[in-house]
Amino acid sequence: MNIGESSGLERLGPFEIFLPTQPVAPALRKEGSDEIPGRLFVVEGIDGSGKSTQLSLLHKWLESRGYGVVFSQWNSSPLVKDTTKLGKKKKMLTPATFSLIHATDFAARTEQNILPLLKAGAVVLCDRYVYTAFARDVARGMDRAWVRDLYGFAAKPTVAFYFRVPLETAIERLVGARDGFKFYEAGLDLGLSEDPTESFRLFQGRIIDEYEQMIPEFGLTVVDATLPVEVQQAQVRQIARTHLERAKNLRVRP
Amino acid sequence: MRKTYGRLLPGMKLADLHGKLIVVEGTDGAGRTTQINLLKPWLEELGHAVLDTGISRSTLAGEGIRRAKEGNNLGRVTQTLFYATDFVDRLENEIVPALRAGFVVLTDRYVYSLMARAMMRGMDGAWIRSIFSVALVPDAVFYLRVGIDDLIPRVIFSRGFDYWESGMDVFPGYDMYDSFRSYQTALLCEFDRLSVEYKFDTVDASMDPTAVFTELKAKILNVLEGDSRKEYFSKLYSRPVAAAPRVDPALVAAAHDGTIAHHFPLPPVLGRYLGQPNGHSLGHSNGNGNGNGALHGK
Image (cartoon, rainbow over all chains, first blue to last red; front, side, top):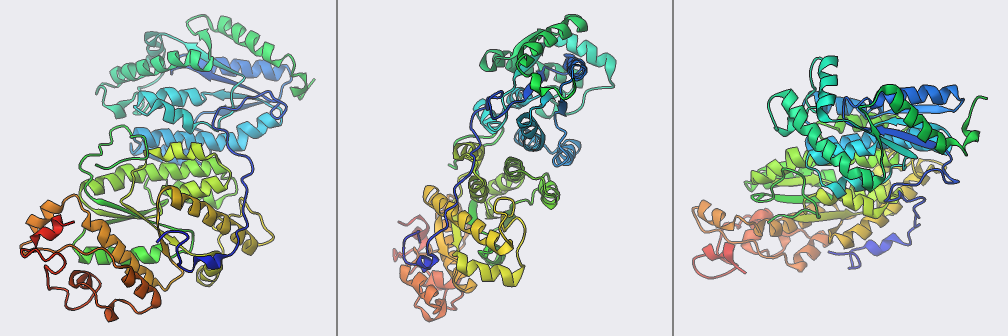
């Protein structure tokens, strides 16, 4: 039986139609408009590219100049992170659920922190942003367009820095610094290789390919991550400064 | 061959998904759970292996969703994606393996409920359709439809108003009743729209549950009759098996009147399924003599 056929449904009477308020834009939203006065700086790159070091130096500099700065880390929403942890620990994440649970975490941070703070005029710093998901999920075999659609609710960053580093350099940095690679980090779920280091190399290689494609697609700002830390930071600060010039009102302290 | 709504998840093979995917949809309080609890033992009695699944029952995200709903900071995008995670986890780990093993999968809600909830919270329709383009197209979607005025007493006198079922996050009304009414009315509106787009089979669920059950049984028999494993079944049964005839509209009308199955001259095979005693006489419906052709009939 279909709607309209006699089935007693006509008893329903007139509907009180609810009109949706504000549709979630299917494209990345532009920041810096009247609606969103804040600034959003994000860092991207493979593990071992040194992006977190650079972001924390930028953070200190911005604070010292009096800006209201908020830092948001990948995969850190209190609502979602226990679920992600469970999935990783029990190795129950497939490429699809890996992608979706990270999008859920990102959504929670966007709704609770990133967007409200940008609207309030804060400088928001993100260690990894949607581009991490685009690179990793596609490297795991997810459809490129599907993943981009999935993150359609994200705010567009003011600047997205991509710390470009050769794979071997990153591996040298990581092998010295930690015990070993984690299961999903090394892409061991994909069965590329049984050896974690080899699997990491193959998986991160795919991720680098994705990042390289995204440089023109999203206008990522490339930083040569083989340069000395100080040189990279000087470049980062110079670029950030140009985007803060007309944002003196974002300062919370003199 | 089974289809998705446009995109295929990595590693998912659509060949050999021989089972049947049957969706029971409807707003809160439409009686979906009641019907599934009746349908499952009935299908098992007929010899089908049945998997029943439903929203937020995944091992991965079920608990996380429950916890998130206890708080007051679950936003609409997060909500949608959390449920999408739950759905895909069940799709990959329960639904697809069960279909491959030839099960009848009965699912309490499917992507449509998630789409309706998201869209009435103002989310972009193209965005939500893209996310759920990875879902399998079901063999049938039964939309249990209850008007708002029939729905309210059911909810009040069974479990009372619930924060999320009243849509308090979108309609912070004067009280739960106002919210519930506005929210469920808006949801019905979304469901009705989806029912056209996705060609739901709408069942008037304001009827007595027994009448709804009778109608669902008849409709599900039609779905099972169109089984891709007909030949296999015809070899399996030692004696010829006749197909259940298409449901006679008069039968459905009789179910509506409350004069259910027993007083109605049913074709013998359908009579057997619906509990009439003389159901064992076979070969009636196609009359081609050997009775075996019925499964290949039409």
